[in-house]
Image (cartoon, rainbow, N blue to C red; front, side, top):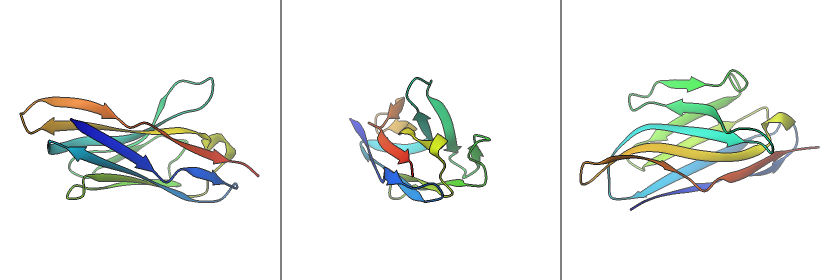
Length: 120
């Protein structure tokens, strides 16, 4: 069984910063692509950023230059540093990861989500 535990969400004023953390636990042999998604009320879930096993990254145009995704494979953790937050960044943020388990099977897992609210 694999679990993702997300933390770091909260309420900030425009221009503020938050750091989201997603920690994976369980019978994990390898972590492949990890990503952060978000879903605002009334909108579809969208990709914010992902980071591949080799360390390369990809960002949504709306967050380029403001958000930074990183990973620590030894700690089985992925981070999202969010700077210059805007009201339109308000959403529930979800961690997603592709894992190879100890028995060799590969699955995609999602975290439970953490709320980010940007408001003055």
